[in-house]
Image (cartoon, rainbow, N blue to C red; front, side):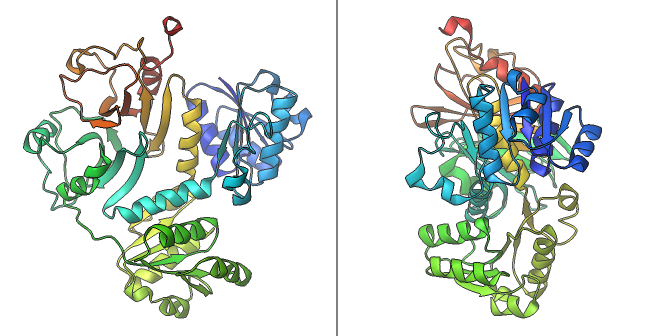
Length: 458
């Protein structure tokens, strides 16, 4: 596949890195010669210095032969125009744009991005995507990651196995026997820097991070089985009132009115603006690293501090100060991969990587076959994939124990007739089933083949 990426920042670099690793033909455009030099020296991609929305620059990058353009510059309008030019002049089939301004995404303008109006096939709002992830993490304390699939009926949760974890040293196949009515399957284990796709005889160890696919209604029970029975936060302090912080505060007001939320925003005008829009949230204007402001926000009594400013340094240091003042737990937004590595040593309880969220959304539209949803874990070591089985799929009609699945794939759940099915050896996949699985990066191509649209389908 030939892909053009407009924007060589952190998100553009991450997408280019992943696509180039999979032998795609990738070209990257950016106005910064420094960023282009870095990306071409580091990755197997072509780089072009110029404006991503200019026809001559797109032409030099090979837009006339491109299968997809992904516009992820810092500016919505550049991303929009780049897609329009790619459509009007070069007839690029698939156009993806990152859109940050919420005005473009308002419900009353839902038909704005369409072939008849602004020809963007996929609009990605990192702020909304990250905001939803933050809300899921708040709802399920104890999980280090939570993602929904299959019309929100299936959840993937990442759970750390602590020293008191009851299921440590128990073969996975025994878990099914001990808890036959628990709709959950361990599909991946992250251990000592490696991601393992386990067999049924594998045992969990203390310190493992288990990736579990379960029925949405069994999420809390699954967490409890792993020894995580933390109570949902009732007193929350949000650091940062940008798009993400405001989205989280507003959604909590709408969906969890009993939660008490206080928000700290450094910019006075922004603080006044969001204070007018929020009803029950207390908004304080000041620095997230000012101990006096943190104390005024009653951070010492907070169940959870969520750091969502645009600065990784402020997020990390602000959360460290909050913990020192008495906050029970912290959840921190960290963009820079180098900071993520030592976040735990710095006292951060959990962090969110916004780049990973955006890359996962893009991968969903890069994948071939009937792939409905994709979520990358551990910096791309594996992907949780939701795919639809077709009549021609080699998976259909045979018991799972009879299938010779490629190495690196473990099926976690089926979704059929709006029902969750936990698979076992006798389970048979039917056409139109949605299959949620975890696949190592090396097995993603195999997944695409298993769910490809065959010529026999037509």
